[in-house]
Image (tube, rainbow, N blue to C red; front, side, top):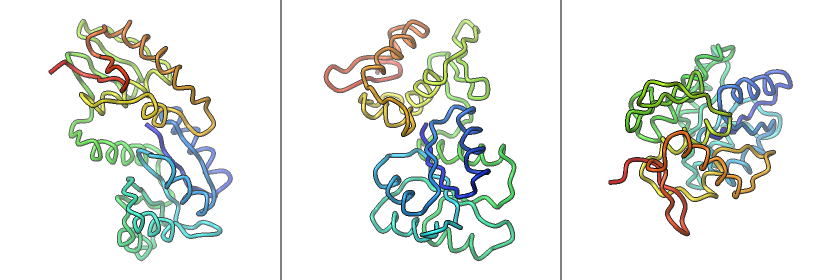
Length: 221
């Protein structure tokens, strides 16, 4: 899953970005409203974390501009804890959730995951298919024989995205856009390497190739 983090605090922004990467997200960090609006328009993020107090264009204006253009990406705004008016303004502008500063990272993580599950119509906290379960805390997969298999960061992001989109045709470009951040080498051919690794681990039946279109994850219907 790929996030856009919009935060101009020179200490908080990089620290949050690093913490989110450790939890298995691809993260792009920007510190101005103008850059945020551009990135949010160009890249199909899974969630955007948007600070309101930005130096050039306020987070509220950025959000209003996105919504005016029909951009429906999930947005969690960061506000001053005691400023109820900021929260109201954020929701009126089209925010999906908010979190007051200062906050605990664990709460931010849970709110992000809740927005992702809601967007993908997943009601449970675990992802399972054919007796296989993805452990998002340990970033590993538990197979039907009750064995745990560790995943690399890219394998984890790829498998999580595919499990969130079971039985959909997922192109290489779509997968690349959601598992790599803006600074990664986005060679779509590398996706084939990771698909092969997941097939070796999980079996060929769960990941099917749709020739000329992409991949389908899930039991064949």
